[in-house]
Length: 148
Image (cartoon, rainbow, N blue to C red):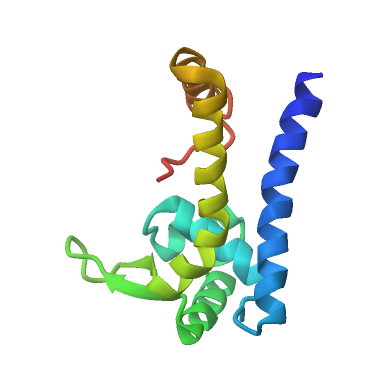
């Protein structure tokens, strides 16, 4: 029952995102392929990773990662920023163009979070936050990265 409930919530977030992406496709605003969308979601979640960090999490080779990154830079969704600590290293930073694209998903999450607070009240919302934090920090060790 828990698995079904969690799966339904997760699926509804994804379906909302896909609906909005398809709306943009019909308006000819979107220019990201499916794989590029996944790459951008990884890069955004990792908060300015290096190329090597992105390749490791995406489980792809460095040359493959570089190819995907070059395409995303050309399309204007991503830029490389030279590290101040190590001038040989570059971090990947999402652009405002991507943020406009990404906000189709983030805005819906914000709407749902407001509804949760209104529906459940402060005490239950705090408990839900505690449970999600435990899931994030303790119960998902396979994804050992610090997210946004």
